Image (cartoon, rainbow, N blue to C red; front, side, top):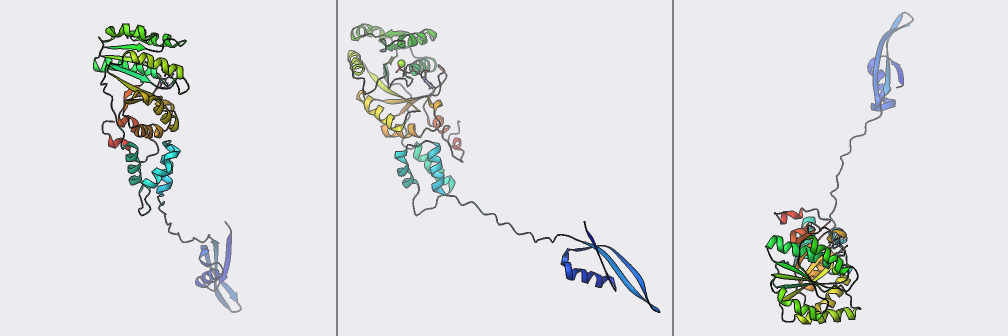
Amino acid sequence: MEFLTLEAEDYERALREARTTWGSAVRVHTRKDFQVKKGMHSEKRCRITFFLVEEQKPIEEKVVEEPVFNAEVHLSYLIEQNEIPTTKVEQIKSMLLPEEKLLGQSELEIQFFQFLLEGLQFEDAIQHQYVVLVGPAGVGKTTSLVKLAIHLRAQEGKKVALLSFDVHRPGALEQVRFFAKEYSLPLYEATDAETLSEMLDDLETYDHVLVDTIGHSSKDVMLRDSLSDLFSSFDDKEREYTLVVSASSKFADLLSQFELFNEYQLKKILVTKLDETQGIGNILLFAKEAGLPLSFLADGQGVPEDFHRADASVLVSRLRGFSLELDQFFPSL
Ligand SMILES: Nc1nc2c(ncn2[C@@H]2O[C@H](COP(=O)(O)OP(=O)(O)OP(=O)(O)O)[C@@H](O)[C@H]2O)c(=O)[nH]1
Ligand SMILES: [Mg+2]
């Protein structure tokens, strides 16, 4: 720190002089009063030693600006986080962002949440004796069939059997035989319409017969025809067809799978591989568009544990980007 000195007739003048030059930065360290001889007289003097401090600026009052909530930006974020199909984005924005109204964050989130769940149907009760799982190759039909069989037996005390239509493909039978053995599930293998009709009396003794089919696409005309052949053998049996889809499929692909398999008059949708996707917007909008109830949800390869009855709370726990605690709408979560 640097010290300065200044001398005047008295302390007040010395201080005034110092302040004339350095203003309010002056801080007096010491003062010394003394006499100076001037001829016969002596004169009073005062010497001050002082230092300067940085002038304190007045504390500016900070104006904390409230961030302005931008509903459109937040809605875009929710849309992205939940992987809403791009073809639906404009419709959602025009529905949820009315021009004449400013939305707060909670209000917007509740409306988006309602939009996602509105019209969704859930139905896990099996109404028919035969349950046929159909769907594209590799979505998890066989695995889900086994999980469903174990669920019906363990949770509902049903007598169940597996019936495989997928008996010619290398490896397919081994897979279902392995599961049947592992979980002590009776397995019937229908190689053709004739063997199937021979099994029907036996199959009548079960509460539910779960039918595993070969995954096929629109290009596999042969496969479709052979499947139709087999189905014709139990035309009179009460049965329900469930479409198995993977949660990681694109929305447009889900719609074309629905169109392809709806020739069987689908009753339900079973969703697999929920563990392989971040956003479930495609599945929610697909189920609504197809107008079919969701029956079960699979979220892993674990048999039988990665399998749940479809209900809103399971799906809601997979929604992302909300600041609202969504589980408040489902107290059982
Ligand atoms: N991560 C994950 N994998 C799954 C799920 N369900 C099935 N898988 C796996 O997906 C693969 C295919 O399953 P499958 O049950 O053979 O599928 P599929 O539809 O019967 O296949 P195809 O008979 O060939 O048409 C296997 O490795 C399964 O373990 C799931 O929910 N999550
Ligand atoms: Mg299979």
